[in-house]
Length: 331
Image (cartoon, rainbow, N blue to C red; front, side, top):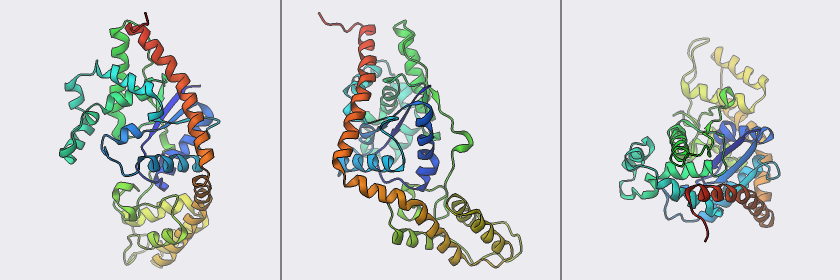
């Protein structure tokens, strides 16, 4: 059984893209590994240093991940800022992180261009905070997207550097947890690419959306006048609708609309109505669970406390050994 760690930024509601892209795999992952899932509230401050409702954002993320199936009895689910050991290890790693390597990080350069008025030290040292998150539990596997691959490589660099500098084979060198073909890319409703919060509210169907909202979003999805020749190749934005339908609709429904398209007889209004109703059926159990959990602060508090205690046990052991290795000892 491997130790696997994944961070979740408290920056918005979960949508179908999150569910099929990662959360579904997290649920499977917790059955096969020792998993740590944390809500990265420290990380969120690098780009949003004065959040309007940080606690509310953290609560929403906790609620939605529990509603989709993360199990606090099977995994350790905790809030990053509940572990002071992370901040201490972050400081220690920064002592051995070099300005040149941090400034070359692609995401730092991109963020610095996008937010020139907020190029803060936390943004620069984001990779060392991410490294602290991972190696505080001696995780061996980390699920990462394309935009995080360089950060994981820097985590590996920092772990090796610590081991080399202090002549101890202490930190394992983490590698990417590869979901392979199981990682589904969910298209957005506006035809521009994948579903995502950054693309605008109308691009994503959120798991907490009510039926009326879902119907409105799906009916506004981009379409055209329809095919003019039998078996015509579908434009990307039409192919997107069929890709969404494959995820939530019955094979018979998908086959029917494929046949209608190939016969130049498709009615996009009917297809979108079918898709909207199938999304509602798919998301309704999760939406109801979100409502139940949101109204149960006692349970959420219990989950957060239990996660903090379990994470503390692992983190305290690591930071105690790190302090001993470096030479911090009580007189």
